Structure formats: structure tokens, C-alpha cells
Length: 299
Image: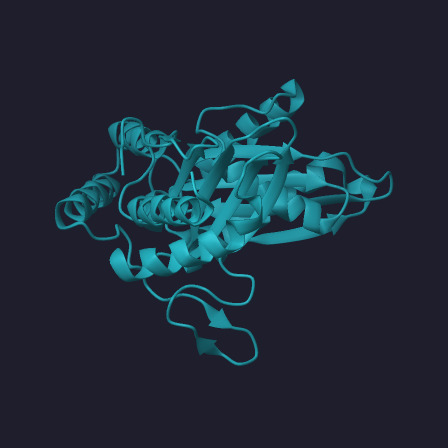
């Protein structure tokens, strides 16, 4: 495929996909919300869940975003080292964001720091955010598209602990954050926890934890056990949908980890709201695509 045509084709695919995920939740989120609704005992919480599903149906019917806050656009890439358009990715995703903003339409959420001016097209200094992971001996690319809304970003916090705090300190930090700020993030929530040796590592891992399918578990058995214990504990708090109280507080808890320095243990929390707008798409070197998060969808 001729280079300029390939750039245009990928831009169009990513613009349409970014547009789409603002209006349709991924399959695992939809399934989990249905499970939580069926398990709910509180009449008020049931009404709130029903309003969520009514809202999603209207978004589909009217072809409009399912939440007015369509967030700051973020792309997390696993890019094959041999993918032919690596050098064009920034241009492609900037232009895809501009096109999706106009066509969806998406709310303008990119405000330049210090200038305090909204750019009007969801692009700006380092935005859309692009996180790179290069995959050797691969000619395709997998993109996680995420809309980081203001509400679900409010609980995002991190802290570097003294090593003596141990994993009990990690758990205490998570509960402090969730009980202080979780209600602001439009529960039930998907909770991502990153654990590492420095704060920036923990922070990025906590965000990447949100992209794992709900129900998946950390590959380390102790990590998986910790996920379940924190999930059970947060649900016992009974925050409920939109904070009105109910049987559950979270859709799931995912932990990602990196080896740490002996004298530090860092933890960070990132949160996805009930309208968890994220999507996964894979393109091969010829730009044939497969949408992994929304099965059977074509653009």
C-alpha cells in the first residue's frame, strides 16, 4: 500500500474506533454491569442501574456518547518493531483524535497548562497521550484507546512507602483513596493498582491494569489473592452505584507489578468509572483490523 494512502487509511480507522468507544462500552464491562444489577438488593440502587442501561440504549439509538465527559484521549500501544507506520503514529493519532472530536462529537477536554486555554479539538501538548511498548519480531500493532474522564481521574493517586509498610501499607493506601475519593468517580468502579519501586512506574502500571479484561487475575498467585481480598473488602463498604449505597462498590480490582528497589515500595491507584470507555483494536501490516474489546463490530 502506498505510504500516504496507508497513513490516511489508519487515521480513518482510528478516528472511527475512537468515535465508537465513546458510545459503546466494551463487552466485559457490559456483562459485569448486568451481573451487578442482578445481584443488587437495594431498590434505589436498582433504579440507578436501570438508568445506566437506559442511558446506554439511548446513546446507541441517537449515536451519541454515553457520557458527556468523553475524557482526555489516551492511546496505549503494543507496536511491532516491524510495523510499517511507526514513524507516523503521532500524526495519525493526533488527526484521528481531531476527526473523532468533530464527528462523534466529543467534548473538548484538552486544556493547555499555564495558558489555561482549551484547544477545542482534544489535542495539545503531549495529548492525545501515547504510551509505547515495542514488541520484537512483530509487524502488527495493538492499540488500547482510553477516555480518561474527569470524574474517574479524581481518585488517581500514588505514594512511595517505606519498605517496612509492606503490602499492608499498600492495602491501607488503596482503601484510604477509595473511601475518600471513590464516590466522586461514578461507581461501580474498576480499580487499577500498580506496585513498583518508584512512583512513575506504579502510576503507569495502575493505568494499564484497567485494560485487563474483568475477571482476569494477576499471574502471580499471591497477586491474584490480593486482588480478590481488596475487591471483597471494597465491596463490603457498600458504596453502590453512583454512591447511593448498594451491594457492591467495584466491578473488579486488577494489580500490575514491577520489581522494586529494596528500600522503597511505591503504590498508585487509577480508577475507571461505570462508563468505562476503553477499547482494543489490532491492525496487521496491511491495516486489516480486528476489534478485540467489542466482538463482531466493524467500522
